Length: 223
Image 1 (cartoon, rainbow, N blue to C red):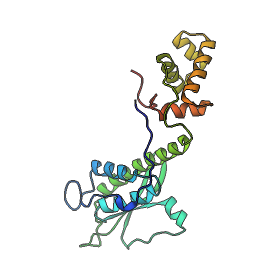
Image 2 (tube, rainbow, N blue to C red):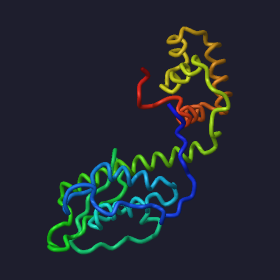
Image 3 (spheres, rainbow, N blue to C red):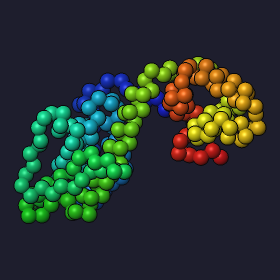
Image 4 (cartoon, rainbow, N blue to C red):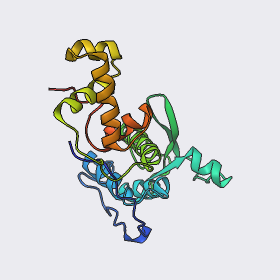
């Protein structure tokens, strides 16, 4: 696994080139998953204003048929954006966290109908919720990891990697000792050496560094 450092260099908003049409299908279809993922990658050129840029991307990807409204952004501005009469709202959420609403504007030719069918709008709202969750967690990790060195001070040995993998799985000291058939003093020495090589001084920073340097995965089991 490689390092997970993210490029945080400043990028002017105008340099982002959003998609100007649907990736597939006719006028009533939402952008496909590939288009949404491409939009998410574009907004990550810089973390500043990522929410505003995602709102802009959604508007362009849907040919201005949908408006992504983020609750936190509107609270920060102290205003609530106005929508045309007849706009249909779909909640944007994921894993119990509500991020805002996706407003589908009335159809230009028949204002009594939404510009996107409800089923497609709901799919788009769910996809936006997933993206916002990932973007928010990524931004949080970036803040938590910004004090870490760009790379480990020294590479870990194979044994140290094994110990680190078990620590990352939240095994207790007794469980690690039993799993690796080592003495408690040996485990303490390994932990100290791992922290020294990664340039960290706490259990909290150890787990952050292990993830940031690509030394462990918290979702892919060891093979």
